[in-house]
Image 1 (cartoon, rainbow, N blue to C red):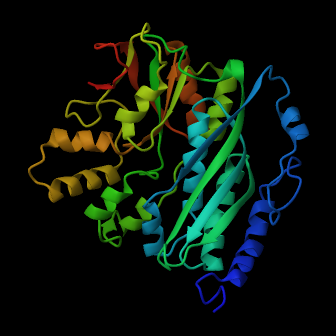
Image 2 (cartoon, rainbow, N blue to C red):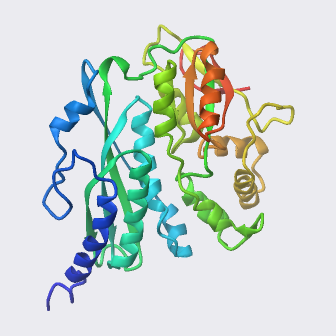
Image 3 (cartoon, one colour):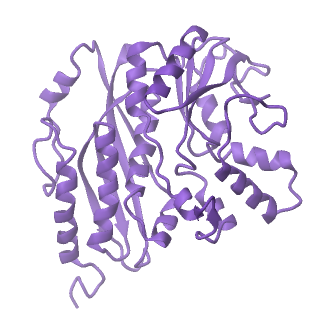
Length: 361
């Protein structure tokens, strides 16, 4: 018995690497010292220092994440070129919350049985996400796990490294009572809550506004890097939140400083209330998910379903900024100009219980 008979096809791995080369090359810049194929990706410190010109105290920031069970949707639809974008977005949107400009990315692709063409389509998406954020795809790893992962199953994770000047790191310390919470539109469901979606929407060919609902669910996570970094040069951003796993309830409070003396809390307008007449319109896909939850358990009250939705999904808002009231309108206009609709969705108020727990009104 040889390695191939044991379940690991080295030749297919070589084919995959060859297919990756053009994608990684499309993201390279002068900081990259070698292409893929070595034992490590190399990123020039000289170029790093050059990129840090004007920074008094450059700090590296890093984040890691994956795509989760959204991958199941991709494989059922046999559309593999967008989940790599999701993987990049889940990492870079997180480090962006502290004001980091992304520098490079590495991915990890695991499968039961490698198909070089499928792996290449996934990495093609990773490269697309890197190009959109001005980041280098520095390298990665592709691993076969026969007998542990089923033959037709893939998983992808990655990590991003970025840079920020220490004095400009956004950590919520400047958030004050009265600040505006500006929500930036999502592109759809993004990459969270798919274990629930797969239970309540089993038919990916279900008609949804004239297209299969699976295609709507597969829309890749929005990348907020370029417009937000541009905005940071124009105005002061006091706090930022990526609405990811845990929805609003878990993520928005993370923006606030760990300083009990400030006693601040986010107060969010509830777009699901019958009397709400603000600009935030929850996209129809979330109504479909909510109806699926309700149909799965008809004993659930509407309030319980809504709590689940806001505790799981982005509800049409993928990123939230805290800004002074005088800066909010300017920020919204700049974001709109860049193709990122943004609206005032709430305010910062004094805490009712000495915590930064979110409050919907």
